[in-house]
Length: 231
Image (tube, rainbow, N blue to C red; front, side, top):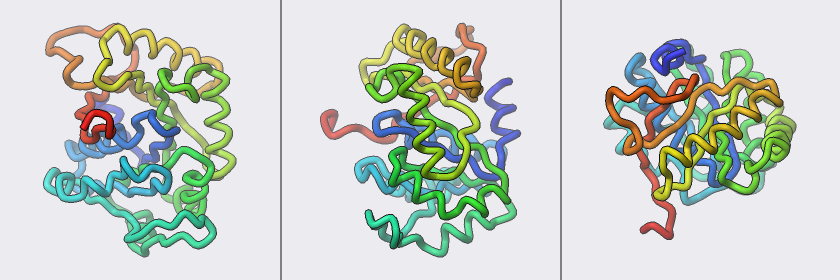
């Protein structure tokens, strides 16, 4: 399947989750932007209560100019039993038109934050993507990827439908690093019985007219965030 086909067949709700450092927010943003090619009503819902440095709502103005509406709570609390969730998120999930992309924290607290919307998400139709970066300790083996999946599913009460391969070492990433890391994600796919929906590669690593040795669609990534040590 080509990336264009994947986007055209996107479910009403696409959820991107993963541990800190996997790059799930970058993936969610780039995926939402890709959806604007086929839909003029794309919403990016920021449910990441875990990582304050990488919340997609920081990109609100820039994304709005590109056709993506960012929806986020006015203030997120770390008390998961009393979440300050705005009514706009409920309204977004209930919308019958367009596509909603959700950026969800990958620890137990972040997963529980989305669990309160379980019935509505299931009724609307969704795919939850587990973003995997095998160069992070918690994704370094198939067993650890499996543990992450089990933890997120248990706390969100939603099922992971596919993996997203995002092998990178940020600025030090090379095509060889991508290829080597992707092999582990493919092994996880085989052992966990989950398809790899697509592979992520930074645009700087992609060249026009080049055939890449991957059976998966490639989502080109533009980096929107930089970690503090790169500032």
